[in-house]
Length: 236
Image (cartoon, rainbow, N blue to C red; front, side):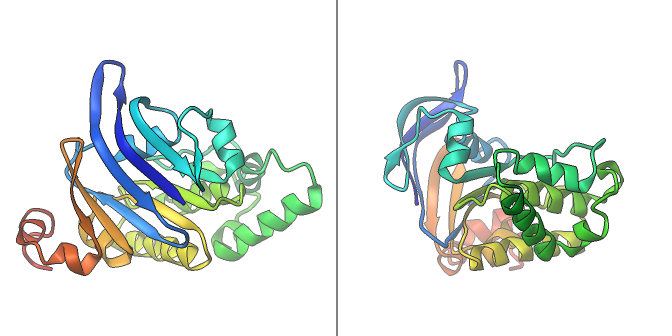
């Protein structure tokens, strides 16, 4: 689905990623974990062409996408939910979703996709005509994900989806992400909460200082004492 090889990327003269290799298979949930500043978010931004790639290859379904523009990537089937749950506060829930499906010309198809989002997130249906600014943090995240799903992506990239949420809402959002994977969407997630990421993911990449230092399944990652001590507090 997604193949990243020898990726060097950053912002202007600042190199953040220093030759990383990452892959995401169909129907797979892959997490990037590591300390702040490790380069996790830059991986997603590089795929979505909002970071400066200086070297390496990025392919999606076998096609080189490194130089494609963001709107072209969306048409290819890649959606991105950035950090901070950015939505349009002065628009209703429904209007936010309609913007996500703005490229859909067939009115029946757009309505069908909106109803599919409502089935996944019933609370959004209940409040579809309410302004988005009144939503809680968890509901805002649901709306941001729902808007991305309007594009019917085959790859969904999420940057810190549980950030700033209560433990209950973190669990709810991450369970929703698992269900999306079960529905057939490949997912690449950046997650600061290493324990939660390990719980829901098929594979994990540990990043430090712009490099991949460990990769494997959750059970494989947990065998390394360094992970337990530094990222899980030795209590997992």
